[in-house]
Amino acid sequence: MACRGLMPSVCCFMFGLAFLAASAAAAEYKLHWIVPTSADYYTNWISNKTFEVGDSVMFNWSTTHNVADVSKSEYDDCSKTSSVVASHPVQIQLNSTGSRYFICTVDDHCGRGQKLAITVKNSGNDTSSASFVSVGALYPGLAISLVYFLSYYYYI
Ligand SMILES: *[C@@H]1O[C@H](CO)[C@@H](O)[C@H](O)[C@H]1NC(C)=O
Ligand SMILES: *[C@@H]1O[C@H](CO)[C@@H](O)[C@H](O)[C@H]1NC(C)=O
Ligand SMILES: *[C@@H]1O[C@H](CO)[C@@H](O)[C@H](O)[C@H]1NC(C)=O
Ligand SMILES: *[C@@H]1O[C@H](CO)[C@@H](O)[C@H](O)[C@H]1NC(C)=O
Ligand SMILES: [Cu+2]
Image (cartoon, rainbow, N blue to C red; front, side, top):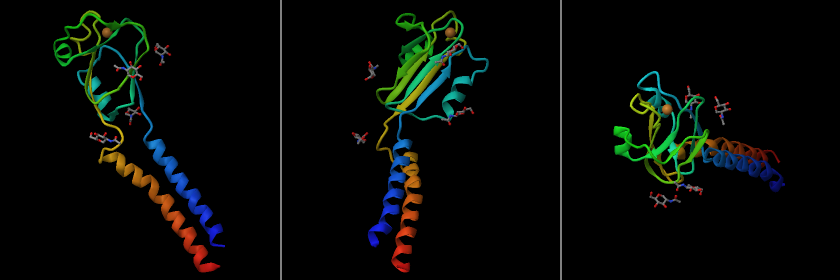
């Protein structure tokens, strides 16, 4: 009797867990890699994204560009000219936390703003937004479970 009442609860809880798993999946960002027409093109691009270990960024372009994975000083003064990847698209795996810098070394593209700086944070146990998303996803499932459970308890 009570066991039949529990089945929907289990179902809803699994549904909540599925939501939780989906919210933790690695993100794959795609970037249209161009010489920007405005100085804030790349800061705008990163502004609504969070980069976590396990995520990746795919650089893609149509005319002549390349991608060089560089240090902060190379990013600042556009000095790097070696170790570039010239075939597109290029998928960069974000394997560790910290700051990552990328530039295009073709002509004066970097000087004209074709440079990207991102900060990669830890996935998993951060206590900020991700935890709220998880709790938010689980809560409806738990609430529905409780309603099912109580309805069996009172009406049978
Ligand atoms: C960020 O904004 C762009 C443009 O408005 C949108 O296409 C993209 O889906 C957004 N990305 C995220 C992670 O919210
Ligand atoms: C990359 O850009 C080219 C040219 O715009 C396009 O044809 C191609 O489909 C893009 N590739 C990906 C993986 O987005
Ligand atoms: C990132 O991880 C991938 C997959 O494990 C590996 O192939 C790649 O070499 C790593 N890149 C860096 C920069 O550590
Ligand atoms: C949680 O974060 C700490 C500090 O960044 C790290 O040492 C630890 O390995 C993380 N644990 C998990 C499960 O990600
Ligand atoms: Cu370029």
